[in-house]
Image (cartoon, rainbow, N blue to C red; front, side):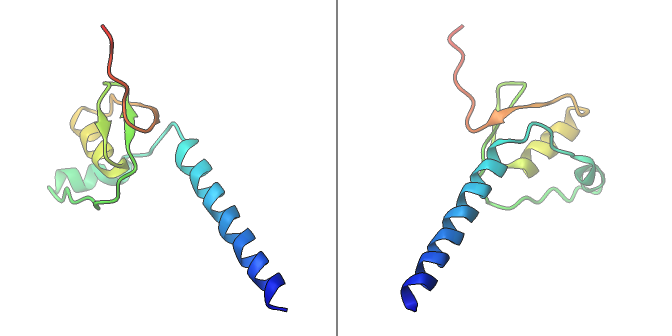
Length: 91
């Protein structure tokens, strides 16, 4: 009886992992409206969680929080190009 339960547990964990990976890499738009109020209040505190994002200014931001505060500071002119570190330009 323990083998089917262990198999099910491994199956669930694997499924969760792949759903997490797909969720982390499939977005292009992040709403920064939540961060606008905090920016005005100077409460710019972000977690240390690392999930790099490459923005339209070719800057890698460590996570969506840091990206949003930068985006608010730049009058919401940034867009996410892709999830991950920006590739260095060869020009």
